[in-house]
Image (cartoon, rainbow, N blue to C red; front, top):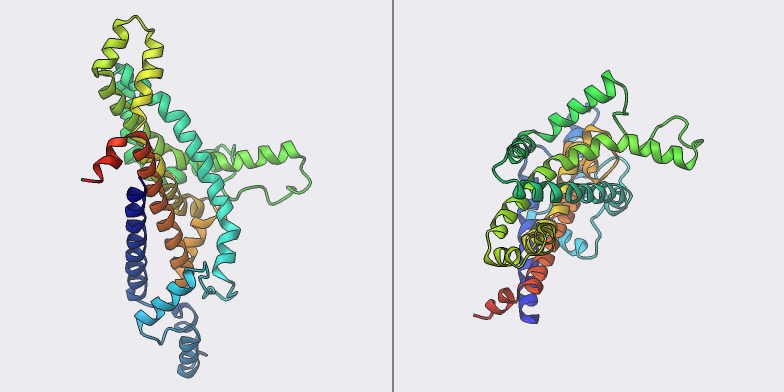
Amino acid sequence: MILFLLKRFMVFLITLFGITVISFSVIHLAPGGPLSPITDFNPKITPEYRERLVKMYGLDKPLYVQYWEWLKKAAKLDFGRSFSPDQRPVWDKIKERLPITLLLNFLSLILIFMISLPLGVLGAVKAGSWIDRILTIVVFLGYAMPSFWLAIILMMIFGVKLQWLPISGLHSTLGYEEMGLLEKIWDWTKHLICPLFVATFGGIAGISRYVRNSMVEVLKADYILFARAKGISEKEVIYKHALRNALLPLITILGLSLPGLIGGSVIFETIFGIPGLGQLMWQAVMARDYPVIMANLFLVAVLTLIGNFLADIGYALADPRIRLGDKH
């Protein structure tokens, strides 16, 4: 088991190194640069002043030197200072916005599994019926519907036409401080309904289909037929025997869900004006703020690889054949 974990950890480090090298190179090879918004449209900027800015940000050094300096600082969670006019430390910006993004993604992850598991089980038990066909249509709609389009439609219907829900921010800007605790909770709830719906709709479609297909295969197994032959109730067969075995492949899905949701946060946080990590990433890309972009990519890469690592551990604990097979 220890050898298995050491090998997976080495893969973790090598993959993370490769991701940072490719990301750093691609960002710097893109047209334009971080100084373009400042210098290209300002006639008062002289070539001498532009040269001083280039040296101040270290952009005059070879690319491999810039990367090495960034890597040494990133190992200490020091991502430098933002290229934006405030020039604040990048890590301070991330720490301000990360809790909001994690809260939204934690809530959406709970909703995804609370809704998708019963739907998947229902689709498997009713396989081939009209219920299963309806669920299949909903799943394909969830896969096919772009999240940004869904967000705009929800804003138009419930925010603009019906005016039932707010369309931006996490809470009201006027009178929020004077609200009581229950009023504040209700205000937050109204602001989060649309973003959480956008964040969970596609996830529910994918997870429910995954559970359904896994359950269909498990229900055909011999030990399920044996359990039914013993006279065990259908409810116990489904939820105690079949579902527990069908959920084993979901270990990988669970490990990869959080990074995927954080990546999707860029869309709905930007559209709904939520001051989270996704909105910060979008603003950094538009401003070509290299330190902020790299810090966000590094964070998402680490979360993705940690998810993979935890999934490997979960698989090894759940199925000894995996860690024993690693020796051959």
